[in-house]
Image (tube, rainbow, N blue to C red):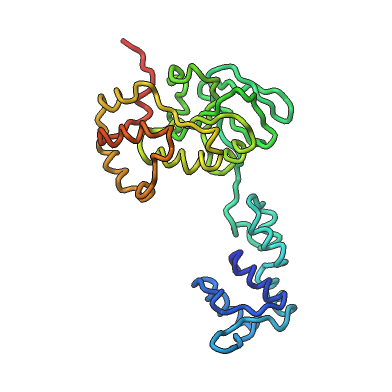
Length: 292
């Protein structure tokens, strides 16, 4: 039986002797589950008090045995398992009798890349972070991974840009850069929150990219440590390249409506250029190309 954390917590309150208004089981899924519990005699019919109907549990043993028969072996531990940010499949099998009850993070970690000689420490052991072209570092044990404070973490959204980051090094000569490509988990945020290093976001020069920077990084890491990369000659790129199609597409992005970009000083120039030229600039335009 698949039950939600909310429903499980309501069951625990019933076991603890509380009377719960039937309206608390307000979602369609929870209402159907409650009907099933009542039909199977795990819970009695609701009791009326005035105009309100209440659910109660007259027999804890009956309810716990019913849950056990449905795979919920321990209600309290099941709730803890549901609240755990990083549950294991073993816990899913033990407390929910279902290893597919939740989406598990098979891989914790994130990719790192750099074209300069940088070292870090993993479990107090020094490691080289300089990547061979075509081979990236993937940090799994990020909780025990540290770097020097003078290294600037530069976040990349685009895998192709991350792969070819050596072709963008002319943009970052003033930094000691370590490039980060987030994976499909929150490990990169956990790590960035645990270190004091400055964070620089290198994205496209369009409104969705600015929202990603603000919502997914700046608000989570801290305003004082974050910046958005803006090249000195950005307006020249807006003049030279005519990407009107992506500009039109971004106007349909629901996240953009009512978003106050101009409260973030570091991106005002980008916002003004987008508004002025009614087009956007992709970061690939900044790639260094060999002259023939």
